Image (tube, rainbow, N blue to C red; front, side):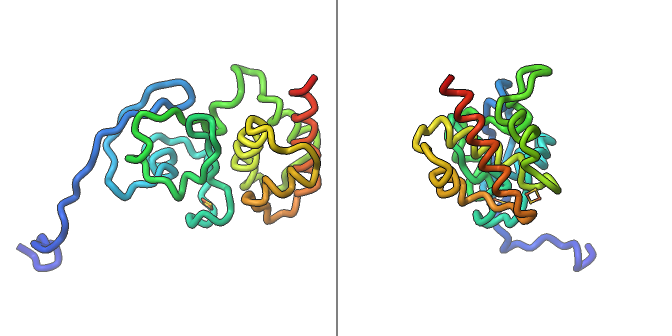
Length: 170
Ligand code: FES
Ligand code: FES
């Protein structure tokens, strides 16, 4: 056998685990390696590329999704740890043809430029509103501080989230 392709007897076995997730309302099963992040499982295994990979280190929020209703950075979460969980990604927010109120608000307030951070911003904002802790624009800025926008669309993002908060209260 060619030395370059000869198996390394010291390499650890590549064990994988079968997990089941409910993604945007549909049950999905898959085999994942112990080190596969939820972000990579969504993007690479399930083709849900709406969730973005920015830093891959928990610093930018581009990978934010909702797990059992709570916002998390999917790049910091191992897929095996979420076996059995309900995951909502940006692809799961609209109801058929109708945008989610936050998606509408982002469009109305022009709350993006390149759009790379937008899926994470919107998923994070969904989590923020359901937490019910934000009352003012300053609260929104503080509680959304984990979601970085390199285009600097922050004023419009805050305005969009405030609009969605008001709509929810009405
Ligand atoms: Fe997950 Fe940046 S890609 S926080
Ligand atoms: Fe470009 Fe936020 S719109 S990074």
